[in-house]
Length: 319
Image 1 (tube, helix red, strand yellow):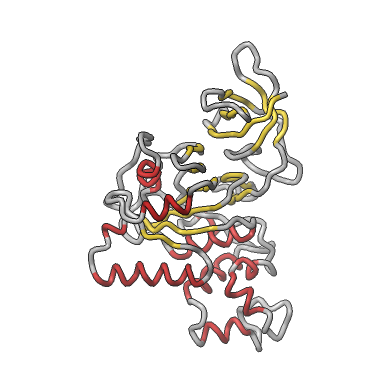
Image 2: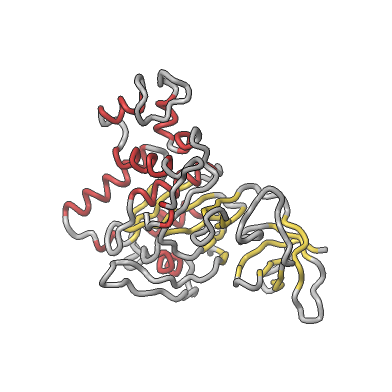
């Protein structure tokens, strides 16, 4: 048996880099059809970033993954096709970076909040890279950029304005990423692949065009893959997503994953306050006094509506 780390998922095969070996010591691997991890119902029992144990390769050079070693952490979302199934985005990561755009296309604040809530739920530090700032030519565009950065930085999420096209902000981003394994995620069309190409010279991943009719991007990243950063650390690139479905949130837990709501909830009159209608609710008082952002509260409500037995399928919409 040999240990290694999963660096690529091609759909039918997992590429495993052997521990202690150089970059050329990579082995194509499969998992048996009944391979499952106890306690998790997922569409992919093995994810990029997983440390795994593999058997000796067969005559065709392909090995079988026999065990997924204990994960330090992971981050998942609900599968877009199977309502109760989940999809592991990546495992054993130091940071989850969400690439967003405020123009062509515009990432909704609800999408951002749902991603950040999921990162909170799985104890993964998160940050934002606001790409395409070179397209923000009007004063009101720059005001929006500063407002979004101020909102999320006030909640503890570092936010960096960048441009994969001009290079603005890339040095700051490189410094933050150095030495870390970072998940890159984002909705389709925000320039995630272009940003990775700018951070890893010579990579030249394929990029796509933006639909003029719908102002949305086309999927160019098909499977997840890990790339080494020149200064140390690694990026896990993941396919662009149009909707982000949260999972495994109990109704009473949703507020825990919004830091500002969690802090205020200790002052609510009732311990089981849902922050929707109860008298003496500190969160509703703060909302009325504009001490918490209305967009964040609306995102909280959108997740709350999906919890419990009567949960709807709103996650299918492109938040």
